[in-house]
Length: 449
Image (cartoon, rainbow, N blue to C red):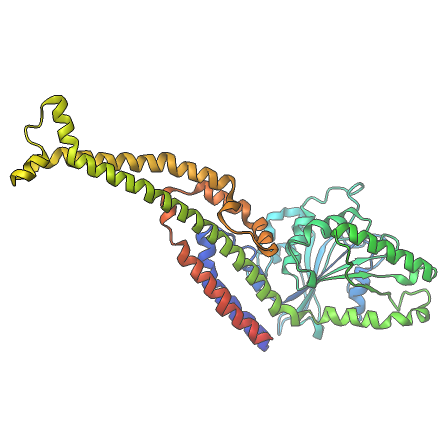
């Protein structure tokens, strides 16, 4: 086991020990936290069916692993990796992958049998794949002509992107970002599931451009389409590459050889990003957890403030009734013969003198308690669940992004909250989360820097 793998295991244990109980306390799923801590580094390769995904994979490992062609050749998510130490290479079906607790794919059961039938692993010997897995994906299609895949394709892409240390998004000069599923992936799926620093854009098959002018036009089209899909003016770097074994005039492509080598090096270097990716993922999940706890803490504080106001009024009313209820009743009914105050002045207080005052004070406290739980708390709860963002400060873009992720869950927790929620130890939980983020997590960042 390498030092990086030992550190990964240590981080996994620490995160689960410290955060899992708090995730359970706030009814947050561990489906996103736990899988990201497992297994080895992964690179997800995406693109339309003619973008050169399989060709790139074959060239990286210098063998024909995946079928290639100008038309769709593979409609499955295929994980390419090395066998376990001492085991023979083999192929595993999706049913085995989603039921192996050692792998990060158990949550993919929810996508159903159609997905499982299009999910597989191929193992083969390669020094590069001892701590790396490449995920080849089905070619993206245009939604106008696409037949139903039978599972939520974009949701699967999102979960794989969350697990991957690198996402390689490939285009070809003939369809430079015009496929509908490509648009959906870049615009909606990747932003919430992968950091920008983990996404690599590639335009392959540039040897198929007839002249430099065609290449410039294709590159410009892709840049324009990316700006529309990302909603940004600044365009990320786009690797330009080709296949030297398939190029029509490979000698004319020599100027791009360094780009090809750099792209290959970046893909193979993904395992070096693994620990940092894990820390980033835990950091994000911990901050989301903190925001949930922070919102509930603010709600609890408002509840306690409201209860204190009601409690003070209840105590004042109860004290008044304890001292004067028997006098008021005597004015209307003539009973009791003696009151609490008269007995106190006479210096002889008996149990009978305390009966009406105690019932009056107790009744007042009970009525105020019911008033708080049945009316005041419910009103507070409805206001909080209707506008939960008012419970916390959203003063930075990072906090606003986190809030968009957790807001629906917070709203649900507030709707389900009972009066006892105002006495919950949210502040104590916040201190635990802060200690993990500010001390233990930062210590791991320092160790890898």
